[in-house]
Length: 265
Length: 265
Image (tube, rainbow over all chains, first blue to last red; front, side):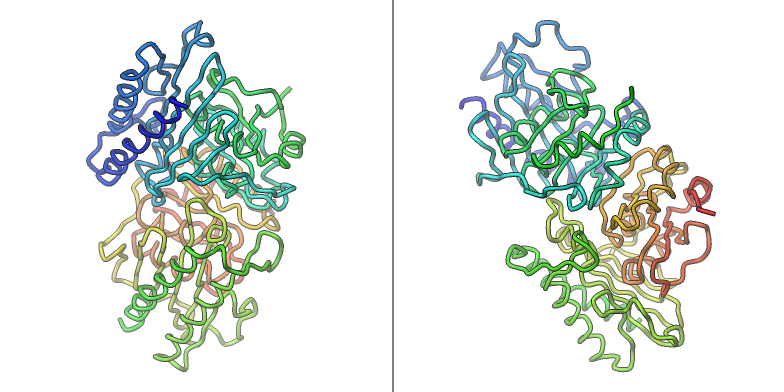
C-alpha cells in the first residue's frame, strides 16, 4: 500500500531528526498553549513541517490535519476527503522533561472518515509500529498481537490523567477501573499507550478527551493487533471527533471495562 | 567514602548483568509472590546474590536487608548495626513487561538507622545516581538538583498506584493531590520515581506503603539534591519501617502536598 510505505519512509527519516532534537532539547524554545502544562516546542513545529511537506509532495490534493495546524475546527467536508492526521510529537511534556522519554511521532491516513493506515515511531527506544487495514500490525517489521489477560484484576492498564482541565472527568469515569486493576500506569502520551496495548505490554488504555492526532495513527495499530477501540460508552470511535473518549483493550477486557467505567448521566 | 565507592563499583558491574538479563527476559522464569502482579524473576535472585557477595567480601560483619531475603521481619537490634538495604530490581513488573523499561537497582548503606550513602542505577537508560550524606548527589558523575516548581498546579507528580492490596488507601490519600496536579504520572518503580524527583524531571512522588529496599538507596539521593522526604503525615521516615508511607518533593511542594493529602483518622 502506497500510503503505508510513505508513512514508513517519513517515520524512518523524521525519527532521526526527533531524536536529535530530543538530545539537544535544552536549547529548544518551549511555549505554553492552553495552560502551563500544555506545551509546544520548536521541535513540534519543525517536525510537522517536515512531515507535511513530504506528504504533499506525493499527494498534493490531500488534506493535512494536525495539532499545530489549528485543526480543532475541521472542514465540513472532511469525511469526503483523503486526509493525513499527524502528531509530530505526542507526549511533548515527556519530550521536554522526562527521565524516560515517552513520546511518539504519529501519522494516520484516513479516507472517507476511515483510518486505512497508521504508523507510530518511538524515537528514544527506536521502535516503529505500522498497520494497514486488514493486513495486521508490526513492530520493527515483526507481527505483533495484543495480550490475552482475561480480567482487570490481573491486567496492566493505563489511565491517562491528561490535562488538568479534564482531570475531574477522568477521575470520575475511571475510579472503579483504577480500584480493580492489577497494575495502573500513567505515561501520558496517547500513541505510546495505544502501541503498548497493541504489542501486548499493556492490556488497556483509557482517556476521556482525545483529539484526532492523539490516536489516528495508533488506533489502527491496536485494531490490527487484535485489540478493540471504542468510546468509553461503547459507541464506535469517530476519527474526526475532537475531544472523543477512548477505550482501547486487548479484547477480553472490553466488556469488563465498559461495565466499570462510570458515565455521567 | 569507602561505602559509596563500593556502591558505585557494584552498580557499574551489576547494571551490565541486569541489562543482559533484561535483553533475554523472555527466557527467565517468573513467579508470583503476594499475588498475580507481585512478581519475582530469576534475575532478582541472581543479582541479589551478586550484590550480597561483593558487599560481604569487603564488610563481612555487616547486615544485608533485601526484598528477596525475607527481610519483612528485621532483627530487633537492626538500628545498632551497619546494614546494606538492597533491591536488585525495583520495578520487576516493568522489567518483565514494559515497553519503556522502568526499573532500577538500588543500594543504600545505613549505620545506626541513618542512611549515609545510596546509589540507584537505571540500566536501560544507563543512568547512575549516587549520593552520600552532606556531599550532594550526582547523575553519571554530574551534580543534580531538584526542580523549583512552586505549586502543585504546575507540577509533574507521580502517584505510585502500587499493588492492588494498597489501592484503596492510595486512592483515598491522594485524591485531592491528583485533582490539583498539573501532570500525573504512574510508573510504579519507587527508586525511579524518587530519582526523577532528585534530578528535577519530576516534582513530587507519593506512596502509602513502601518497604525499606524500595527507598533506602534513593531517599538520600532526593535529600542530597535539595529535596524533602517524609511520611505522608509529615513525620520523619524510618528507613526500617516495613510499609511506611512516603512523600518526596522538590521542597516547595512539601507543605501544599501535606495539606492536600487525606489522612484517615
